[in-house]
Amino acid sequence: MSSLNILWGIQRINKLLRICRKYWMLSFKLFVACFPLGVKKWFRKSPYLTSMYSRNLQKSGLFYGFPSRKKLDVLYQSNIKQQDVKLQHFQDDKTRKYNFIVVVSKGHNKALSITVESLLHHCEIDNIWILSAPEELAKCKLVINDFENKSTSLSVAVSISEFKNLSGSAFLLSAGDLIHSKLASVIDSIDVDITDVNAPDFFYCDTDQVVNQKRESPHFFPDWNPDLHLSTGYVKTGLWVRDIRQLCNIDYLPRAEFIASVLAHLWLNKRTELKIFHCPFVLVHRNTEALFSYKNYAQNMMQCAGELIEIKSIDDENKLLLAWPISSQPLVSLVIPTKNGKELVKACIESILHKTNYQNFEILLVDNNSDDPAAIQYFKELGQHPKIRLLDYPFGFNYSAINNFAVSHANGTVIGLINNDIEVISPNWLCLMLGQVIRPDIGCVGAKLLYSDGRIQHAGVVLGYGGGAGHAHKYFPRYHMGYLNRLGATGNYSAVTAACLLVKKHDYLAVNGLDEVAFKVEFNDVDFCLKVLGLGRRNIYCAEAELFHYESISRGFDDTREKKNRSDGELAALKERWGKYIQGDPAYNLNLTLRRENFSIKEESEVGSGH
Image (cartoon, rainbow, N blue to C red; front, side, top):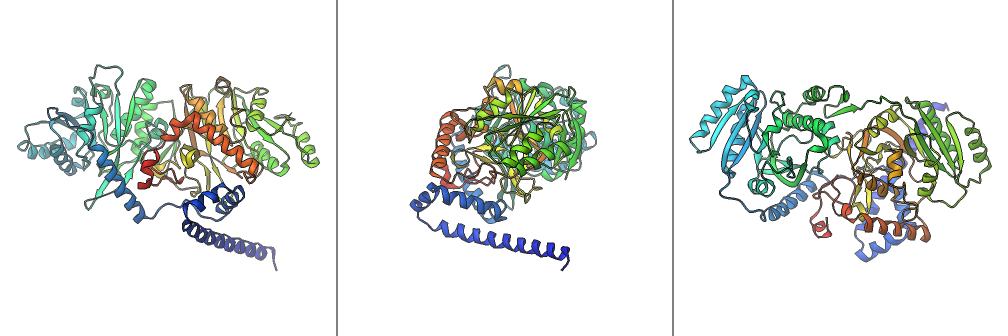
């Protein structure tokens, strides 16, 4: 039998085993679902059973467990009923009139009447300004003329040049969109005098679509997420602006990308000066999403960013790859702790040395009480490499203390925390992460980490999962774009994993590094990232930096009573210190579940759980 036939046979056997494990796990999950609650709680308390379940789930090939379309529909109908109840608390100001700006894309003037009808039905109108390309202006005026007899409100069609003469606050929509009946009352709760310097400059809301009189396809956004917006332009409609004069320098043609481009432009030019709020209610029903062009959005971004950002590519027409320049070529100190694990360390370090484009780095390999002669000898050989220094940490295992010790010996101005079970995939991983981390407003930068079979291990950390923290989009396929493109696009998260994390050394030292007392093994990275947020930085998940992470191979699972007690203590410390983030992570959304890491809509039974 040839070697090819043998290899083919092994692959078929492995595939069959994965299929069997998958269906065994599905059957087991259904079986466990029938248990009484008390039995389930006992199951979770068993270190051995929980670690066994976790290992088999990872190997089973079950991807992301995303609910079926039918279940999502049921969950969303329940969700909007809950939202409607909450919205009743917002009281309308019957004496108030409102300004709206409707952006009409080329060839979409017929949809304008849908939006105007919705506005006149739900709000007292002061002005409806129609923003369109010059060749579309006459058609828009014809639409407006049909409504002038239906309302005493002043309705004016404007071009870009006229747009610069407007003033006051306004709500921006794309033609074809509908508004919720409570939009005006929500605006009342946020709207303020435009001379108030402490007032929000903008707010945006969540959205959905109405298809055959049925609400579906919700977009539950995070709080203002500037790096996600630069990558995807996620705020495409439903944008309130305190003073229209802030938009006076915008020269883009009115297209479906106009609102997203305006917000990106303003943020790139003003950044910390802008106060942008998020309202977690569905107040706009989208109709023009399909018209949004990432190519046009990229052109607008290039126009407003200049040399600030290089837009490398437009991947799959649903995100931009933004490369931030690295002008100073800083030294990066990559810290890799290990105990034994010769083969893991070899795969890790050789992949860094041979697959990394950016070469101004040093590797600090920290040996924590290795007792395998082969590993010890190999580490000594590595220590002779010009880019590698071998450090001995002869104390008990404490992940936080080991990394703090290594950072004290680092020569680089940028620190990279790297697990010994990491392996490089994309050669530009360090360039992309470094370009992000050297930005003055950025704190920690994490990568897209994959299991060996290509499923997602880490794509940002969400606070609140499991009552503590978990990995966003865990077990999703590698090339899935995720919820609202958040897996495939670079964006902000409250935390990222230290399995592969870059941070400026002065930021690391400013927060006293990892907490060696409260978080010896777990949640030290989450705690660290949240401390860095306190410096006024933003943390980033860099979607284009891809590496393998053979999670917990070296450390193992918490499958003993001692490890379980330590893990429980660290979880309790996280809840005590960062309860505010666990109750409502600003990088997530209150309408999304905390029971699973898949961004599905929360269930009604979660409403009273504090999230």
